[in-house]
Length: 320
Ligand SMILES: Nc1ncnc2c1ncn2[C@@H]1O[C@H](COP(=O)(O)OP(=O)(O)OP(=O)(O)O)[C@@H](O)[C@H]1O
Ligand SMILES: [Mg+2]
Image (cartoon, rainbow, N blue to C red; front, side, top):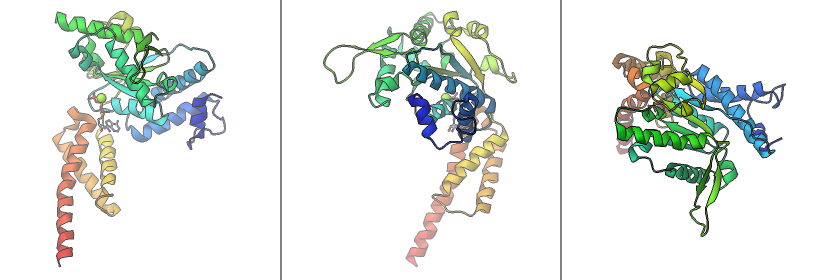
């Protein structure tokens, strides 16, 4: 049994039910369960990604045994604040794989510098893996705002977008990155990218807007402004939903619960605060354009005053 499945098995999950870890459905299901504990209202995406992650772990295991299996790269498409970054980060966390987030907008704006980005990615991943290159080579690479890499009508930017798409292509194809380790005197080292799991992410508003369960294919991506070579290497496209009022309520509840560490409150009070904040959010409708990002500021604002007053009361008690 490989190191990866071994590690998963050691965890105290409900993964190893009667079928045991050899049953791929069990493992994917275990990952799915962990994902849905953190990411609300995206069950279809969690399901697809749990299988993607399971396959990735299997690939890691087979790689150790000297067999390289083909991999697929996937794309998360969905509105802002619906949990794309959260999903990718959670995937890495639950199986303890190194994770790097690359911002495509940034790459395009900084301009194409022939492979530079790739070296930086290798550096970050090796650092994240505590210097253990073998582990870094199994990492999850999350490329955010990928829709900014589409060709525009601006020639300069087009050239950059093309350059960055090419840079990424060489990684997706399992090319080797040569990098110079920071603390070593001599020579460049090779970083094998053939087992990196790529997750691309973007809003793709024009492709998914108003389309329930939008089914995006490579052809759509090419029309959108991606090189065919690039689009064709994205095997799995996952559409994410807008967050419903119910999901927002769950998010509010979770955050209010966190405040009980600062401001002890009985359960009834917790319920009342949750309802109150939720109805405030539904009234201002900010969730329709901010997604889950609307929750934090509102909850913080709500409790700021209460915590301030609480401080006053405690001071009064002391002074008496
Ligand atoms: N489905 C969800 N379940 C739980 N939390 C969520 C969900 N969607 C968003 N959030 C919360 O909202 C915030 C923003 O989420 P996230 O960064 O994942 O959005 P995103 O889809 O990556 O947005 P963007 O396209 O703007 O990058 C985070 O704090 C996250 O915890
Ligand atoms: Mg994001």
